Length: 425
Ligand code: UGA
View 1: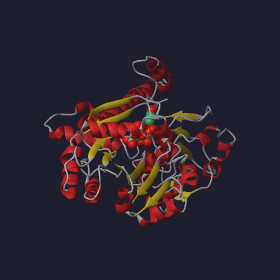
View 2: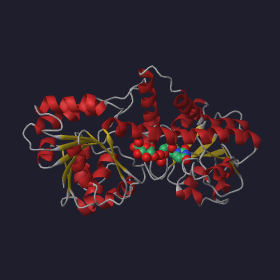
View 3: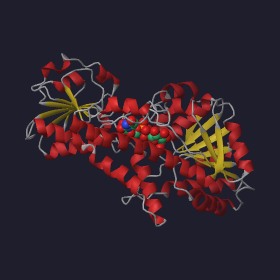
View 4: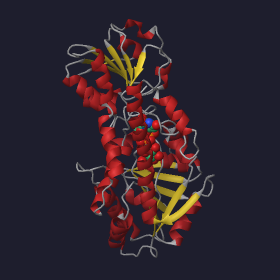
């Protein structure tokens, strides 16, 4: 099929390259000139395994990128909206980009034969039917379900393995405005070996929020039990191993630590909480998930301060600032709160991260950055591990020997040395 994709964030780009791998012709569209220029030159604007190789393979052949939305949509049969839906300060979802994309798309639909518009952006239930469809109908002068089709097709891609997740999904959810729209989109997924669930548009929208909220809840649960474990001198990983062996629970997303970050969980749980409250309900469970997560990063500071009471002038080495490994993304990363607190306590912060230092430097231009973990450890009074990068796994006793004091605290469980202490283990 000929596909256009609006938005070249990690979802849009992974979806685009993924569909190219599945033998489709894809044009990605973005309003950001610099980004388009970068992709056109074969460079992925985000660090995401496989995207660079995919670009090399398909760019100029079955994959293209442009600023020209009209051309991209005109030359395709189906368009995916993959624009960001960030949180406003009160947690409410910001639908500005989605509205604009719908307007631009709607105008092109005016002169087009049947075309299907698919919302992939994460949106609260009702958004596609109450915002996207009316805007498309107004701008195109056509009726949804007749002149054009509409689907909501949530993404379940994890950063750091987005392309892999796209190509090997454990389910594809197709929320359909009408049967014809759903049939059209299902054709596109026919060569994916997975289960396809066809639902109403609103259910598809909520499946995404409920899935992310459930996973976030598992993490906050593991952290709550983990904080208790710490008091009792128990390793929460041993406990969760036993808990996760129950097939009804599963061992996934039970890793305790300094809390969840990223551009999805915090934003999506907040948006769901906000929307539930709008209905006059009290989302008590989800509010607790968020509260626990707000406080969790400070656990590592509490432990550090038990070992070094006054942090002023102390060299604190921070290994890993990305919100998770295999990404350069620092959005909502626990490292931000932790480094802010260290700076408030007037510590000297020395950071090393394999991929995320450039992004971190924009937020914290005045702290010290090191080009290797070993160098960052040199002369440190304490070391905090905030991201479980694989390369930290191999750090051994000798690597830590250049520290001034051997205080090694893990916010994520990764090291194989005895001298460390964990936040919940
Ligand atoms: C998450 C979901 O996992 C995806 O299914 C979803 O598509 C995506 O959000 C999205 O909405 O677009 P992502 O944010 O990329 O993906 O990363 P995760 O692997 O889910 O990790 C999120 C955060 O939770 C990270 O900070 C990670 O360190 C933390 N985490 C994860 C834990 O603290 N413990 C765990 O056991 C697992």
